[in-house]
Length: 111
Image (tube, rainbow, N blue to C red; front, side):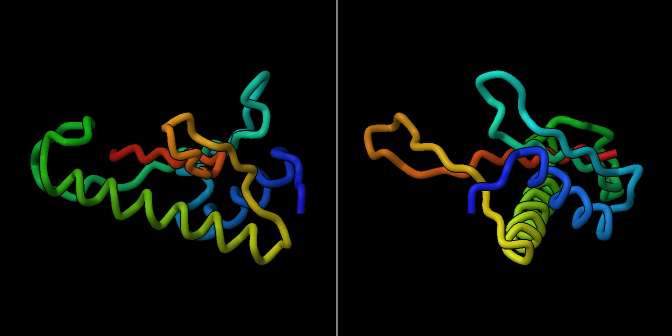
C-alpha cells in the first residue's frame, strides 16, 4: 500500500513512544527531494560503561548498545507499519547491484 510519509511517520512514532517514552522519541518526515523518507531519533540511557562518549565506535559497550537499539527501532517500525497495512517507501541504491533499500533512517542518541 502506498502510504504518505506523514502517515507512516505518525504510525512509527506511536509505536516507538510505547517502548521509549514520548520525551525520548522524535519522528519526522522528509522534505523536498527526500519527502518520502521517514527519520526516527530515539534517546536511550547510557550503558554505564564509563566512557562518557557520544560517538559510536569509541567504546565497544556503547557501540553494541547503539546497534541493538537501532535494530529494535527498525523492528518496531516495520511491525507497526505492517499492522496498519502500510510499508516503507523504497529506493534502489546506485551500488552496481540495484539493491532495494527502505527510505527509513533510525538514529540512536546515547545519553
